[in-house]
Amino acid sequence: MPELLQFLFSGLTVGAVYALVALGFTIIYNASDVVNFAQGEFVMLGGMITVFAHAAGLPLLLAAGIAIAATAVIGVALNKLAIEPARGAPVVSLIIITIGASIFLRGVASLVFDKQIHRFPAFSGDAPFRIGGATILPQSLWVIAGGVAVFIALWLFFTRTLTGKAVLATSNNRLAAQLVGINTNWVMTLSFALSAAIGALAGVLATPITNTSYDVGIALALKGFAAAMLGGMGNPKGALVGGILLGILEALTAGYLSSQYKDAAAFIVILLVLFIMPQGLFGARQTERV
Amino acid sequence: MLEVSGLTSRYGRIEVLHGIDLAVRSGEIVTVVGANGAGKTTLLRCISGTQPVAGGEIRFRGDDITALPAYRRIGRGITQSPEGRQIFTNLSVEENLRLGAFVHGDARVDRDLEDAFQMFPILREKRNLNAGGLSGGQQQMLAIARALMGRPSCLLLDEPSMGLAPILVQQIFDVISTLKSRDVTVLLIEQNAFGALKIADRGYVMETGRITMDGAADELIADPRIREAYLGI
Ligand SMILES: Nc1ncnc2c1ncn2[C@@H]1O[C@H](COP(=O)(O)OP(=O)(O)OP(=O)(O)O)[C@@H](O)[C@H]1O
Ligand SMILES: [Mg+2]
Image (cartoon, rainbow over all chains, first blue to last red):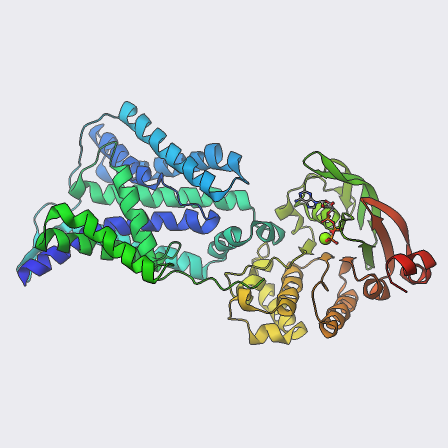
């Protein structure tokens, strides 16, 4: 029993990181139908900028704030320099642009920073809590709380605010969005800023547990993408549940079978779910009439 | 109120509007009729700012708005119910309407919503349903109501009767003629020339990117050339 609990704890921690990455996908996807594969690089930037700002002598909290703000600016620049000029191109082309941007950001990070593995101290120390014979790190609680907080904020944003609806309206029908007075370029700018900030927050919260380096982005983007697909792309609830399910699946496979199988097992389950429910667990079913 | 002069517009290198002159006075219902592909939709989209203008000028209440982005024309009082309805299919009926008032974040939005429901009671019944599930006629009502939520002083309507059953067409035209009493000036694009001219004060006839005729609506209805070409009489 303590064993199972331990696996669940570590699965929950990893899952919360995946959930944060998946939540980052949600906004840009909702605004433009684009899956932004540079999302993982935002996570990397959040961690790396914090590492170097902290090493330069800034307090951790300030360093993290700077990292999140700087990453948001980089997200906006990505939109202005790479996505906006290609407007009108098919969504697939835009997705490929984000893959290119991710390779570019990784390269720049390896030059501006370095190729070492880094971490910074956990926020509330490293003394684990003991619960039911298993242990959990205080930083894990930070990660989980961060995932839940971002989820709630996004859910409120999309269901309760007119700005959130404007984001949804922009992806659903850009022409009509302009006709009701929405500045659709501004919506895109906002989406990239928010997505990048959420990604960077994930990096800040997770780095004390997972460590970071210039190349952690790809794996995270893929896992976050898988989690978002599992839950239903575009839905914050789906991102949260998908991320946590994926993390727990991996932890259980690694614990009871072998850590060699953990990626494979997770992806097999995802394929099965998508086979039965192509829209994901919480995906919107299309109800359009022409 | 609205003056269009020498307006040209193109898709790529193909010019489809070759110098349109048109004026709408405050309080009027003006209609532009013309066959398929004449350029009516393109003209309306130039006025709402969703189609680039190649040459000429659009003035609204004396101001040159030719270069103003679409989202800033709403605040000035120009809203459009576009061809093909273009509602937000992933949002509820009420959310569609509230987005219509996106630029007006104040208490009057609730009153306007109530007004819209009075005008189209079916929308009240379906207010929480996904707009994508509405029938064609209901979607058309939603598109018009959404444009009204923007508090237009000048409402642009692009083929509101398209694809609707005759009884619904009549209902839509009835609603449009009541807008006069609400101080809404209307520019109405229609292929249903007869229905449009019946409720309009004045009309323009458009052919392949040019205005070929204009005049009082009752004169146009009586004109033999119009009767033959557009009214099928
Ligand atoms: N997106 C586009 N790209 C290229 N050409 C276009 C486009 N939209 C319209 N056109 C062309 O421009 C001309 C005018 O089209 P427009 O849609 O303005 O006409 P319309 O009078 O509204 O026609 P309808 O009665 O069918 O709605 C047509 O020849 C049409 O083929
Ligand atoms: Mg048309």
